[in-house]
Length: 170
Image (cartoon, rainbow, N blue to C red; front, side, top):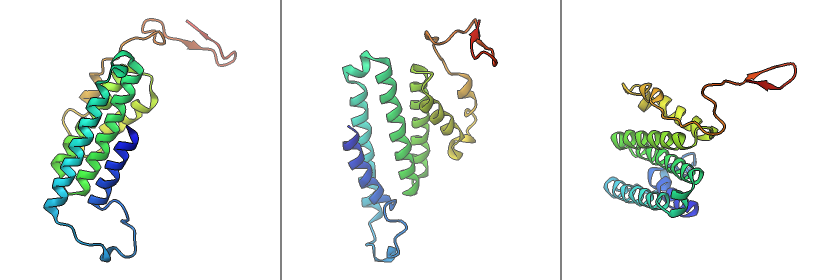
């Protein structure tokens, strides 16, 4: 799946000018028809989203919470790349919507796997993204997390660590 997505993202990068942006011969690159670029960009983004949705609906993801969280997290990462591409393509509203979807996907993954440090970091960073940080519900989303206790979590008995001995007591 990752290779397939990377091929599509490579093409998106070419379309929005993210590839070779620091080349000395930028003036030698052919100009692109903006309408054709936007059309192809929309088709590629739709295709990526469809691939990810199908991948998340596979039985392997439905039967295993960790696998499901990983796939939802990867969908969030892909939405973030789509958001960046839309921003580079001057499609600000489409970019904002993709950032929101990315944030929501990271949140869904976090609710499934609350101790996944990568998902936590990505979710918090999405809330701090300038295009989303000023939204009225940016901080409210943090308070509405529905984390489920797992065998690692003890809501009613916090672990107290003894610094000298390195052991914990309840």
